[in-house]
Length: 51
Image (cartoon, rainbow, N blue to C red; front, side, top):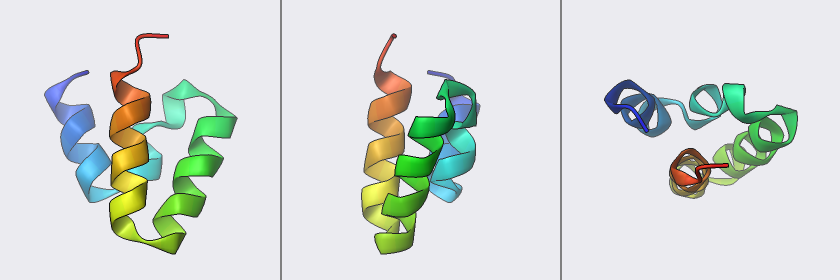
């Protein structure tokens, strides 16, 4: 997980996980619409996953 990705996950979570697949992007986007904090948490968890 790079420093740029972490900053991007904090500023705009869906853009940070766009390389992880369409499903991850949609989930993080929907969570970001529900609230900024759930989107950031989901993005950081997805970025921290080595798979």
